[in-house]
Image (cartoon, rainbow, N blue to C red; front, side, top):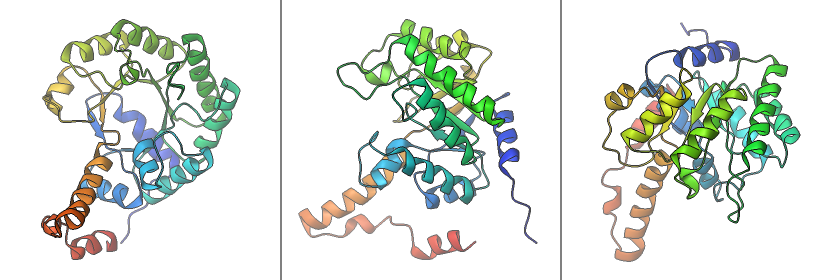
Length: 276
């Protein structure tokens, strides 16, 4: 007998409870297949990856149009029983009013969480002025509240990612986003124990998301001990999948060899995964 699938409200309640205590991994699938596999492994929630999804469409990170991203969110929400957190980039709009409209549309897809970055996409001025960034987070908060959905809002400070590894500035931004209504704070690019502990302490009691996008000396046990509430991997799983494809294909082109297929997952295993 088939169990009853959780509805959107169930997923959102579950997602919020995950942030109350402990530390969990929220991996980042880039399509329905990867989402279903991660669900089968037993993860408790998923997050989209703007980079992984863009690469799967033959585009660079940050270049996907809002309409296609919204379709992607709806596809993943419908495909999986797990709560889905949206990597919603900087809100797909030039001003706070536009961010509010984008967030309203995102909430309608059934997502359980959503992040807003303070990056601009402009190499000449990669970070938004703080007042502008705060206004955009506040607009996202108000849009969620008006929608009546219990969607968790994540405020992201992109300083370390964008060549400004200033911990004081990062913390100032995160605290401002928390005051503007962000439920969870995220500073991708921080890596050391000291940086992580400082961010956790600065925004407490609000939860912190840590990005582990490359090989790390820290284990989940150690990360949890630092007070981090959730761990995401960004585009790392997608990059690992691309590495397998690229290495195997290059071996054929450059050496005329097919050794790259040695560790390929058997088709029977994949069919069994998706047949179930």
